Image (cartoon, rainbow, N blue to C red):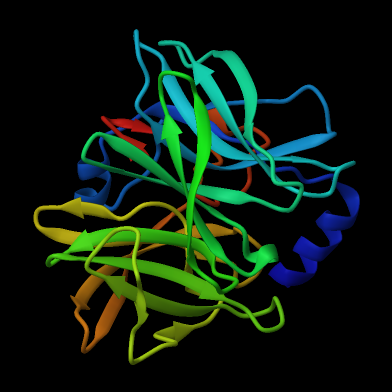
Length: 280
């Protein structure tokens, strides 16, 4: 019945992704398994574009900088944009910072040795590439190609002296297969894990944001797409991460409280990221 209702509503309404930003203590969220912050949602005035996959990068003078996917329907592909929000989470500035004329999304950000690297999804081009973000000029420049595979929503963690990429592939668009790669250096070369694909399915496989480390434990946000794309977020807990085995188990679910007035007209949640007690 639930699936029937969803399909019926899909025919009645125009659905669009957007982003939200708020203050939030990710440690408290993980420890208590509760999620109900007062989110400031960006509510675009036009239906010509949607925004998704937000990642926070370091701002200045009390501002918040968010890298995200910007998808203009008429152009039919995604670009990477940078939005600047003031201390009250009001949008101050917005510009495209990476346009390759082919689809880009999920601008995963990784900071190391004072440099911020961006690994946007470019599965349409059958490769994962690395770029460097310059906070002074607010520009993104190409560094190198990392893996020549159509990985979706690649997310990296440094653990036990190695760098681990979690990315998914899909043969038919209806299922996701988690593949893990590891290297001694951030920019590679990477080698595939011997157990690839680690797991498959529509819930708990495809990444939904950066890894979260609390009390020495590692958690991986993942998408739940069982009934509809981006229905909610399943937080997995990493049980084992080594060259021998990768094991994770479901820990909690993140969805939107429909009784919170801030969430009016917001139905699903797709990605979550945090920097200095700010959530996007």
